[in-house]
Image (cartoon, rainbow, N blue to C red; front, side):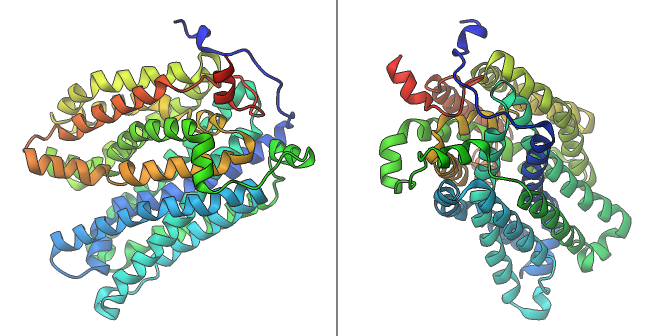
Length: 447
């Protein structure tokens, strides 16, 4: 089947948004996502300092506790999706997003204020766990809401291009967090970083969150959401059981695609520094530099991939990415094992193969749900799948290596996830160019 034949006939367009408002909507959505991923970046790349400051035991035990605490936020994310999703469909996307970014940034800021374990004992890790739970709870509404907000503001024929800037924010936030940890480490030295320097990046989250909240508070809610309210079409979001019964197909499709999406995502962005240092033998600084360079390359291609998806369709982009990773991930892992230069090239190529998925998330997933349950359906399906497969991907990769002794196991795990994604893709209707006023799964049944 050709790329063009995958595209459906266009349906009535959504209300036109002027360029200035559209730019503000993009900035408001992307900055919130950047703030979320900024936290993941500074935590993942500063885990050695965090573990030494806030946890007891020797180095290995403290790092293990810190990594387990990192995963806690993912366990709470489905609860956030269950809470914020229906609220966003009932009260509006803007109201929820203004609160979640403040909650996320505030919790990240407070992590930088936690006294050392030497000063307050077990209260140090306890406070960190509580703050990570707050972050996970807010993130459960932040990402689904930001993607929905972006999709509903973007014009139908350019939803892929404009939606890609949400993921540009993902990479920008993560890269900034990683870069600041590396920069302060080089500038301050190891002793100062352990004593107080690791806290500075966490404190920077406060102004980022305030700027994001200001931008979001000045926005009107999305045209589609306002229009649904004026037309009397907005209804109470159904309970979870009813939501699953009426919209189980898009929720399963999103859940399956997210398995592939986030196993690749968290293996590349969160686990890779640890893998490069412990398994490949790169120095700590080299293991930080490799993903930073790779993410900068990915950022350049994300808008291009998003725009291309408007022309050829989302399904084509996902198919190319999933099959490309399935074929190339093992050879590229072997290339990374050759040394620093090979690691840079291998990471860049893996990142570029992943970009067609990453760039089209906010154009693909929200469009699978009708307006009345778009926020809730997306947030719940996305966060349940992410909590099970995304947050556990780094630990799973490390555990598989330990059990088998094969250092290519993270690559094999990514391949298995891509197979799940290909199965889910088989059941996903094409939504490029289509109006968000309609339910693509209902139309697919009628066809």
